[in-house]
Every structure is written in structure tokens, then in C-alpha cells.
Image: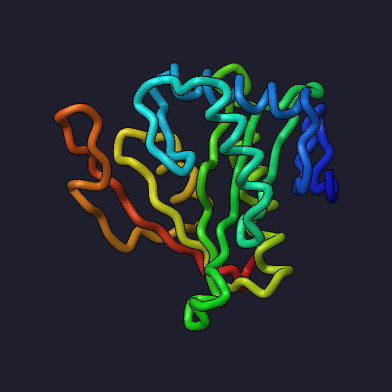
Length: 185
């Protein structure tokens, strides 16, 4: 682990550059539980069904190799309970260098109601601002009401929607797009 960002009430949030075998196992379990709890999310792909653990392992370990991705994990009582990525533009996207995207932000069902999602978001914002990012962007599916409320209550502004944001089976899902200026972070 690179740097500890938060330590309070058995909650630890870290920016990571490596993951131990135990952490990757717990992270995969948290992802599978989140997907199974009908809270599917994107991990480079969109899952409506629980993927094989090896596919999840390869995703999380592979994401560590992408220089534009910053990964954060949250442990609750020393067990990985949450995950968040910041995705910065690649070097050839010079006009977008001021911004980054919050992606793959989730908390395992057993750890919800602990404030982890908000704490992870706050530390991602702090890290982004410290690294010269002035705007964060994100997208969220309409059915994820708690996530939309979190982002709205955290100062994110909705700038648009798309009726065909995702498709699960034969059904299109609406998505909403948000941004936040980090001047007050």
C-alpha cells in the first residue's frame, strides 16, 4: 500500500499501488457481493451477472498497471469493504488534463451504512486536487438511488442524462452524468 489516507473507527482508506493476495481475495469477494446485491457496476465491462473470480482478479491487478488509474481501497475492521478508481486522461488528451473521472466506486453490502462511500469520495477528491485536478466527472445508473444521492449531496452537479446508458438483457438503463469543481475541497 502506498499511503494511508484515513483512519477512523476501524476504517482505513488507502491509495494502493500493490494488492496482497488477501486484499485481492477480499476485493473480489466485495465486488461479487455488490453485483449479487443487484448493484451491478462497471469494471472495465458491465456486469449484470457475477463474473468468475479469476476475471475480477485480472481486472483489479491489471488496473494497477495502468498509469492513468489511481486505486483506493477501504478496509472496515481490517477487511476490504470498498473500492474506488480515479481515471485521469491519457497523455495525448492534453485538453482534458484538468479533469479526472471517478469510476468503479462501490462498497460491499455488508459494509453499507458505515459512511465508507462518502469517505472514499472525499479522499479521492483530496488526492485529485493535490495532483492538479480541478474537476471530477462521473456517471451513475438511474437505479442506483443511494449513489445519486451521495454524489448530489457531495456537491456534484448533474449535467445530463442518457436513456440508453447501459443495456441489461433487453432493457435499456438510464444513466446520469455529474461533475464537481474541486476548488472548495
